[in-house]
Length: 216
Length: 360
Image 1 (cartoon, each protein chain N blue to C red):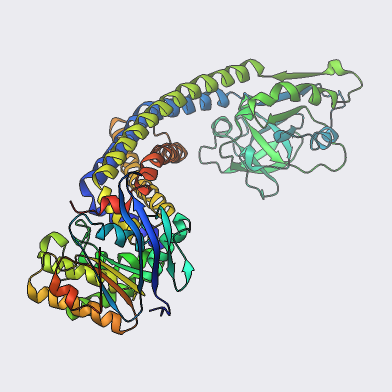
Image 2: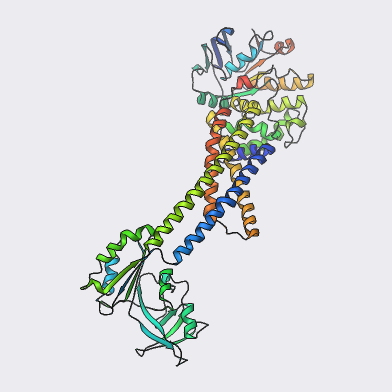
């Protein structure tokens, strides 16, 4: 993991999908290394949008996003894609696994984009899956595993490249308590290892277990 | 690059139905092209070979014995461009099978040329040996190509079979040639000039005539097959144009269908491209991935099509168009398919991760 010193900072972020109705208004926060931040709020308050802004998938209408003090929201598309592959790990709301590929292919997908050694990464997949309690053969398709296992496979995908920043969108939304505990435990451990972790959640229990809560 | 090709191949394999459809489509087009244009090309090649066999590229200079035409003329012609082969034949000496004194005589000529293989002889010929065509061997009564030749000038030569002499020399059948190296200006009766292409016969003829340098130009005649050369060019142009139109038409249709298939696939897999973009794939990577995938499928389909059409042509006894034709069709199909797939590939690269990954 490339350690960050100042973490991920948002300053006065504004965003609107249609140019009229503003989804995010003057939002500022510091997501420090070593901390798990919960982003909470009512449905439609813009939690996921905020995560996409912080993850450089959307460009803010105004305001700025900084990583370790360097402004990154104004970078070109190719540079932002490179940053996503090098520094970020994402856990999406519905796991977003490729149903046509194997579990191993899904977990090692980010390695492809950061031009890493995918074969070597594939060798680490069984151990990573085992660490998160996913007891499925690596050549299985995502359609052959449960929802809880799929979300944990998505977590493995987010962590395989040891990213500096992990952004998770409702990672425990559809999980049983046991799977939720595994996922949250892994994210907390990642923060303890020096990573920046942000979790969008509806759950008060999840938010309470985080180091910081930001309500929208 | 290897990682990209591996990913494209894995992605193609994971989309079995669409990939199989693309391969089948390309294979069908290659079969259609080979069974239509391929046959035309094969027929064209046979027609051109037939025309060439009567020497469309030949310029033949015939001179009287005392005309003064010598091997010096060959020396002067060596400096001329666009000549594929050059040979001088000495005046005839009669030869007979030494083992059959009453046998019929055949004309024996010395051949002066830098390229003996084009005249059906080995590059390093055996000394004191005459190389005879099948017709000459028949006339000499040497069906196995072995024997001894007795010349009217008193010399005796061994005989070996000539293999595939140049078509332009066949008009001198029965052909018995003795490879020779000029020592000074040796007299010549015939000089055969083979132009690099049929189109070059017309411009080369006056050059050859001007280099004759005879005291009396009337003692030599220069003959060409310019009419045949024109016919050849016409046949080649017409049949090539027909083949090209057919190929472009069929490959164009294939490209449009491949593009439609790819577009449908991209629209069906919007979320996958959104995920790839979110995880850090650049737009360039997505375009390269899609194009590589198309290229791999086209190559597999084309290979299958070439093999299938080869089998069909072999079974029906039709002439095969050849490796170059198959290679050209594959390259054309690949190029057209890649150009047509560019738009769907760009469409795939423009998927917005935030939109595609949003859960309602």
